[in-house]
Amino acid sequence: MMHTIKAGFLARFSKPQSRSGNIILLSAFVITMVLGFAAFSIDIGYLAVTKGQLQAAVDAATLAAAMELNPNIDQAVVETNVKAAATEIAGLNPVGNHSGLLLDPSLDIELGRRDWNSANSSFVFNFGPKAVPYNIVRITGRLDDVWNAASGQMEDRKLPLFFAPAIDHDNVIMKVGAVATYQPRDMVLVLDYSGSMNDDTEFKSCNELGHATINSAIDTMWTELGEPSYGNMPYAPTYITVDGTPEDIGNNIPHITVEYRGDEVEVTSTLGLEKVVLKDSNGYYLTFENLSGTTGVFQDNRKIRRVWVESGSNVAISGDNAGERFEFDDADIVEYLGLDAVNYPHPSGSWTSFVDYVNDSGNVNEANYRSMFGTKCLINYWNESKPKYSQTTGLAVCSTQPLTAAKNASDVLCDYITAVEADDQVGLSIYTHTNSNGAYLESGLTHDIASIKPLYRDRQAAHYDNMTNIGGGLKVAREELENNGRQDAYRVIVLMTDGVANRPSSNPEQWAIDQANLCKTSKIKIMAIALGLGADEDLMEELATITGGKHFVVPGGGTIAEYEAQLMQVFQDIAADRPLKLLPTSY
Image (cartoon, rainbow, N blue to C red; front, side, top):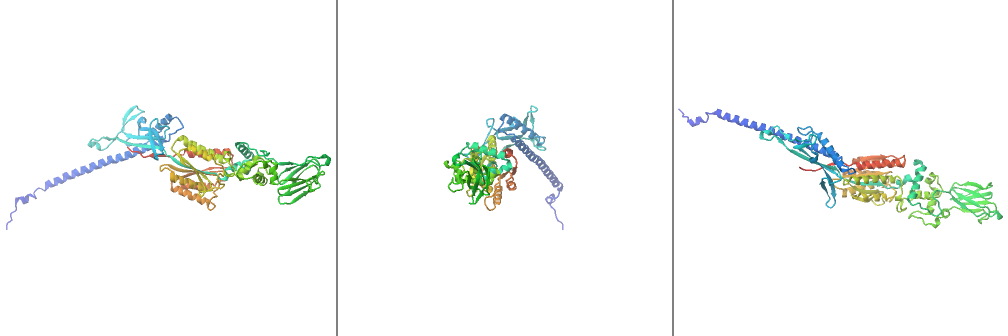
């Protein structure tokens, strides 16, 4: 059977070569597109890399420029230094097809000020020659036509592309910027005002610092206090000499004097001595008989309270047939010094307490002044036994050490911060205090740095309490920084002690360490200063290390001038340690 095949049916299978040509053309187009995209991807990647290089170069130049900011010199010099530093560092950073970034100092580098506006809790930026002293730098980095001051001509710094010229784009203009300043600091001084902060102006330090140094220091205190005088007590420590009955030649009655030395007396008579009887503080009697000569020194093992002297015919002169009697109870000594007619000048203490102190204190004995009475000993009594403001007012004006060294060092820090005008805030925490915190916030964070200085200068050693609550001082400072510190500020505590933590009574070191860990959580750094031989250097180092801060040691054993100079240098280093910060900017 024959089948007929229509011509149209055969036509559908008759041109296979035409279809193959279409596929080849389509493939060629696709490949071209892919290669084109790949080519432009290279340009896009090149642009991204170059922009990163440009930003890095501008950031480096801006930070280098900001390091030249200095409010203490001519601001025209600062501008010159800033621009020189920026152009130098920019030129060392390759960008795209250039070995270094070229800056036009007159156009690309701007100086200005950033000031804190307390009204709306924000910073205000101003640029230009009137915004002095400068504390901020803004730099623009451009790949464009840039003036080259060295060659005196404009340079084409546009970025050439690899494949974009195919679509009539030969190069690209690119611009980025950066702003840098010293990061403002919120800083709280945490200062040790325990009782030991006047130890280097007390008799107890004679062996360590020398008698001459301590005596000179107390002499200075006396002058600073207005050279006070009480009764007929001299300034220089002196033994008391008591005059007896006037001489009666006709009745063979001598004139006797007794110099009182605590546990011994020196007796002098105008006639020969016959017998001396001592009564001590325990009520025991010691008799010296068969004497010869008109003078002698008689000693007991305890403090002497009463003396009888037989000489000539005076056996009955005091009415007890034991010779002439001399009294040396505390109240009697107060009377001999004329202090019974003078009110004791401060809220705590008394004349009899002072007399007892001079007779019994080992520290007075160490200074070779035992039982020697004078205003110098009185000042030491205040320093050692009555240092609190509530006990002895007015000692803050005195140059007690090491407290005065700490005050002077704090002045250096505050003066530096004031001079640089870097929007820093400072607060003051003093420890130890009798409150529940164990420390007192004398001032919250403030830009009024001058208001801080009178607060620490008008406080005396043991102003509130004798003890050392390092953790309390840290707690008060930390809470102030957490509650009132600025978010973008560099938060730091400057902690100083000359002693060992002894409050609270249970685990005082751990209490301080716990506070340091809380500071770490709040991103607060501790700059810890251990002052003198008595300071706990290990604890201070640990507190600083926990927070990523720094640890300083100002060793004792030298002169007051030496450690004061070292302490002032430490505070100056802390004041100058201002972190630089790049601020957000957009172009």
